[in-house]
Length: 126
Image (cartoon, rainbow, N blue to C red):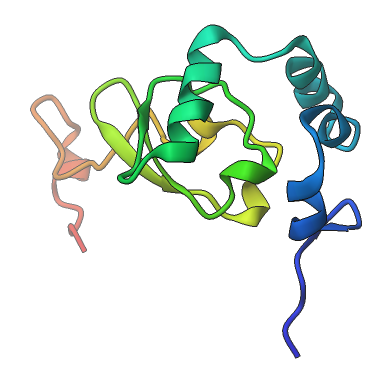
């Protein structure tokens, strides 16, 4: 038996029928304030493009809140260097797009460099 996803007791179908104001009432305070303040011109333009786009739309609006109408879409989000593909799923509701396009890479260190202590030069790499 598959578990049906719910957000604050509402199914995804019920969430998609809600208006932005109704959805704002069930998200946390920071997201609620942002949604009730309204979307900026760039965000409105992106949401219109999202409805009609054939291929994944690109955006630099990393601060837009993920709303139920975005679920199931693919969005290309800019991380400052390149476009990151974000597949929007139901668990992302209420988060911001930028949270899923990381701006920093994990540091990968190799062998000890010049100036390392003598003991650290002889540690095995594996």
